[in-house]
Length: 227
Image (cartoon, rainbow, N blue to C red):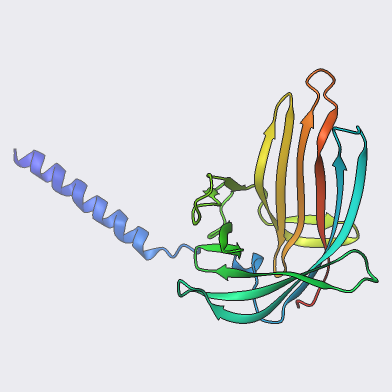
């Protein structure tokens, strides 16, 4: 009996020793807040190009426009959270005037980055960044669950003539079958935020596999005033 008590006591002592060693180690956690920088005065400009497939005519058409986001003020949301009021402008080309089309809110806490458009909150990123971690983007609203996940983290990315040293990729939708293809991804660059988005929603002919209807759209950052 004494021997059994001694073995048990020795086991408990070893556990406590391991625990103290673990407590003494400082584990550095990389949160990745720099992928969602927010400050009053920030301005970003994007080029949007899309192709739309018409199932009635069997033809496709292309559309282009530019989008501009300007963070204009610090605000407090109705539920008491600090946020940034952001103006969204659009124009058809470089020589057109910007038209204000919407005002929305952006929020970044210790655990997530969210956008509220028309009082509809969507969780764009979660912190800390972890490879393949996933979350319900609609956890803060009443819409159907929509699972986002991280793919590539801290990877370089070449966008036309611009090179980004460190980006993260968020896969928002990915489904392929005989009659439909849907895919959406966003890329965020360190210190800049979102720099790229690709979105497609296509219907296919089940026999030929050809596109019958739907769209493909690409958004690229073409200008900003961030340092």
